[in-house]
Amino acid sequence: KNQVEQSPQSLIILEGKNCTLQCNYTVSPFSNLRWYKQDTGRGPVSLTIMTFSENTKSNGRYTATLDADTKQSSLHITASQLSDSASYICVVTPNSGYALNFGKGTSLLVTP
Amino acid sequence: DGGITQSPKYLFRKEGQNVTLSCEQNLNHDAMYWYRQDPGQGLRLIYYSQIVNDFQKGDIAEGYSVSREKKESFPLTVTSAQKNPTAFYLCASGSWTSNTGELFFGEGSRLTVL
Image (tube, rainbow over all chains, first blue to last red; front, side, top):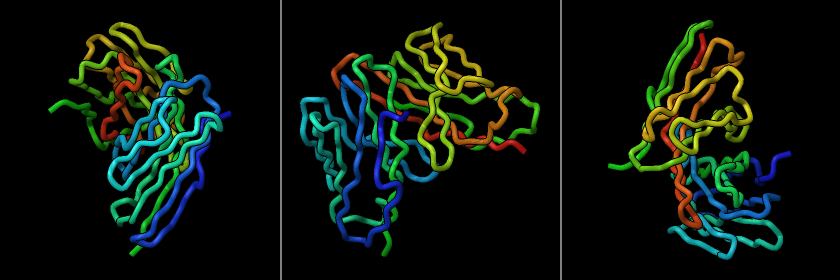
């Protein structure tokens, strides 16, 4: 069973609108949680990384939150742009460090 | 510039042929990984290496082989034993010396079997 579940699987929003992507995980104990953006046909690029003791981390229009008690993370995108169209992947690193746990990603499409 | 480089970006292969995908990093990372990505699926681990001359099988290692003779290099060979090799392959490197560590991905190699 996948230890990292992302929702929704896909999402379509209008340019300029906000959206929130979800990541639920069962990995425990964990070291850190990362969000990556992957453009079609490209490698994933890191957006944010949070340790288990952090609640929020921002990177421009991207804000990630983490609730270690409920094992949930969210990625909020503000004032979306067409270039935000991509797949967003949640990655949880266990304390062992090497065995990374990937979600299947949320595919976001921003339309004019 | 520091980074991780995969080549080739696109590769076509006839059935029955072995192909090798290159992955090079100059980030001084100890750990390197190979993942396979198929449409609608998450990244699946093929092989990983924590140090030079050592590597471990991931979840879908059958039909693949790797080597780690140098810290900077972690090539992946897709053998003819791999039943369905057409996919997007991603290499990553990481360092876990801090609480957050680093994890970077290459740009990927798309393999198509004709």
